Image (tube, rainbow, N blue to C red; front, side):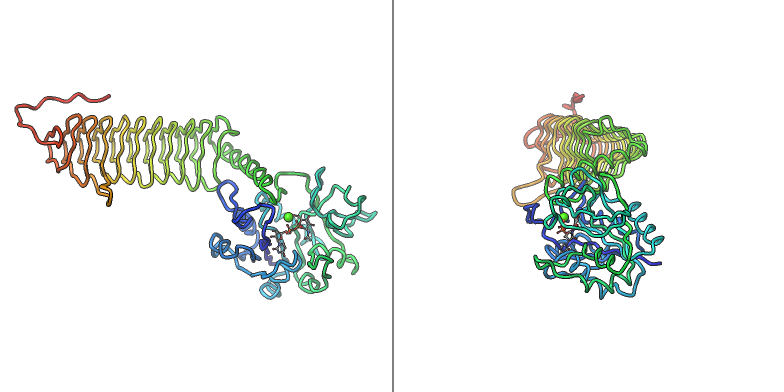
Length: 454
Ligand code: UD1
Ligand code: CA
């Protein structure tokens, strides 16, 4: 038996009150629709995505992970499924229908629904939810034997029917041949729409039985219609992600105060202190200590790194690097193994080679710093002349004195030194000492050892 999945995602999501299509709103840093596309992998073919509102933006995000069918006018869930008929008819024995706005639905649940339908002789199986807050959902009507007889939309329900606690989640697994043969029988509603839910009555009229699998209000069934639901989905997703990492060997000191995006990777024995935001495609190695109060966005960390009260964006730390408190690594910062970056340092688009020490406040931009070089407090690369960015190249074992300004482009040779307060406007040869403003070499007899900043 082969399976295809249809994901309904053409609706506008009016109640989100947003310019962004509803299914592109992120949950744990990932557009909602991608969760539906992921669970659709219970089938071996890419799912068919029914798109309408914001279709170009949706296509751009989902790319070749789905096949697309355009629903020009949104005439209801039944109409949406009809759009996929010419693409899918004759290609599979079973068709799963899910929505693009239920990011918490698990693949195991869909698998169970699919298996239930395989074992079932009737035309389809569906998921329901038993809840004390049925508001907004279609109500499930069952006969005295417990068989589903109809789904009544809340708008059309009687007072009695509204009291029913079992609701339709909108997730179905159909016998494909039956589905394609009966979609055309769906009547047009008074509102001018075609309700997929009307297939229940159509099946029952033929004597077919509907297999309804009730769930109980798990976070999984949460559908997002408003930003209130969006926040609920976010909280539930965070809970799930954090639990997954703890079970994988990561310590979260306070999971309720840790945000980890869906795509993040963390090595075992890493400890995350409270108020950390691990965002985007951040990768953290083993036995690191992150936080408290740190934000890592698309950061790449090796093993045994330590980060405190810092912001690391699009930057790389090899093993045994420590940053902070109050460090800011910006795009393109690359700190090789064992680099020490203390408080109030900012590094952008620069490589700090093995063992570089930058213990205090300072700014390195567009720089390459050689092994074991010491960057004194207050060092600044003046990398921007108001029109263009320029590079600073610093050799190995260099000593940059406190408050040095390196006016780029400039090259400092290996083992060179700059005096405190030097403004370096010209290249410095290897082993030389330069002093003053603008910095100049001094006669050898006047060499005095510099005091290091500790
Ligand atoms: C639908 C069900 C309802 C169920 C609820 C669960 C019907 C008639 N009603 O109601 O029984 O309790 O879902 O959430 O099916 N969509 C399209 N094209 C359309 C219409 C909808 O792609 O023409 C998509 C939407 O983008 C959305 C999904 O289908 O992802 C559900 O549509 P929505 O209008 O929210 O259905 P409900 O009225 O909530
Ligand atoms: Ca809905």
